Length: 202
Image (cartoon, rainbow, N blue to C red; front, side, top):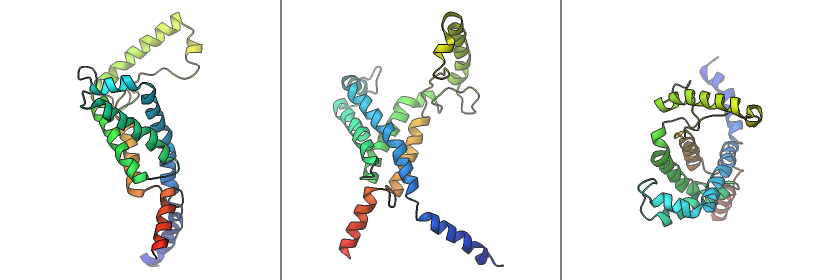
């Protein structure tokens, strides 16, 4: 049996699976949409503080035109997140969202390293993360001695938020994938609009 005879059945399987390849970008969109919408909504709720944080060079980002940039960031996240759900203008929406994620990663989270949640056992743990283990252990001891620890931990374990670039970069990679794939075959408004336009031109 030759290589072609071995490969053909496998290739036919992949061709069959490719008919539902729109499922992958659909899942990316549905995962990202609530994250972006919530981030935008949080900024809307605290708009004045966000503008001040964007512009303040002492304890904030120190960016020029903070009112404009804050408004653009909010629009990208809130409106962009909404458009991701039905898959409208996905490639266009992904661009400002990627920029927002990169700004967040390198201007806010970069000093904290990679990890979002401090895990001293991770090979990606920085010195800051390694030191968090002792602090968390002491905090737990204090709560166990002076508080209702069982009730306090009933909703989940206590952790140290390291606030590294992990989440922002993960979202960036997901958005980059959507930039190249688009909203997805059969699963996005973009696909059906494109298909309709192509048919009308024939």
